[in-house]
Length: 356
Image 1 (tube, one colour):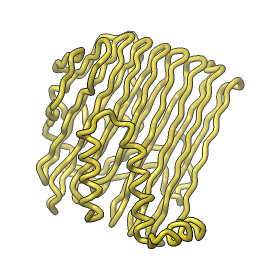
Image 2: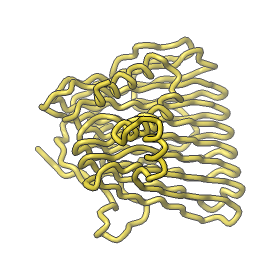
Image 3: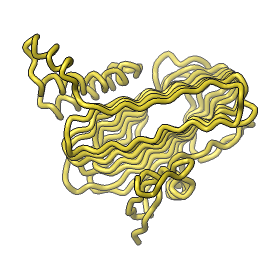
Image 4: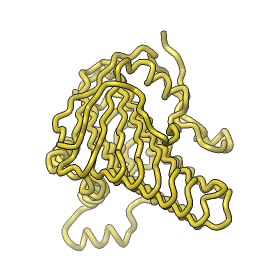
C-alpha cells in the first residue's frame, strides 16, 4: 500500500501558490525497525527499551505533523530510551546505517535527568547506490530542570535515499539545549525540530549547516514555542544550494501569552550557486505577549563581485571560491560536534563530494 503523506505543515498558512504550506511525499507506510548501533555509551547513560517515560514534563509537539509522527511511532515496535544522569565525559554516539533500498524507522527517547550534562550524536548513513529507500527517524527529548544537553544529528545518506527526521523536545526550568544538524546527502529529505520552552529561563540554541546539490530536495520546518518566563532561543541555519536542488525553510518563533521577558532570534542564510536552484523561505514570529523581544531574517544571494575579486586577487578562481565558502558553512556547524571521529567522517564525505 502506497499513500500520500503531508509533512512539515507551516504554523499559519501562506498563499497556496507559494507551495510552502507543507510538503507531500509518497510513502510505503510499512516500515521495519532499525534502532541503530550504539558505538559509544559513556558512563552515566542507561539504555532501555520502550517508547514512553515517567516525567512531569508535557509531551513534546511535532514539526513534521502528528500523522507522520504516529506513522513512525507505530512502526517502531520497541524503541530505545537513553537516560542521562550526571555529567558525561564523552558523547553518546548512535549510528543508523541503512542498507540500500530499505524502508526503515526508529524512535528514540533522550531523557536528561535534573542537573545532567552531555552530548548525544546520531549519524544517519547508507550506501551510495541507485536503489533508494526511506529512513524515518523520530527523536523525542525531555530535559528536566537544569539539564544541559546537546543533540547533534549528522545526515550522510546515499544520493538515492529519502529521509524523514524529527526532533521533538520539551524543556524544564533552567534547562539548556543545543541542537546541531549537518545535512549533506540523500535525495528527498524532510527535516524538522520542535522545542517547547516550558520551564522558566530555559534556553534553546540551534545551528544547521547544509549543502544541496544535483537534484536534492531539502524541506525543513523549525519551531520554538516560548511558554516559560525569561526563555531564550537562537536559531541559525546556513548553507548552499547549487545545480537543480531545492531548499525549503520554515522557521517559527511562537511567543505565547505568559512568556514575559523572553527573547527569540532566527536567521537563515543561503548561498545560491545556480540559476536553476530554488530556495523558498518563510521566517515567522508569532507574538501573544507584549514583554518580549524577537527578531528574524533571511538572506539569499550569490557571490558578490567584491568577494570574487578578493579570492581572484589571491589566485583562487570562482569554482574554488564557491567550494571553500560552501565547505566553511558545513564546517561551522560540524566544529560544534564534540567528536573528532564524527568530524572526520563529515570531512571525508565532503572530500567524496568535491573529489579532494
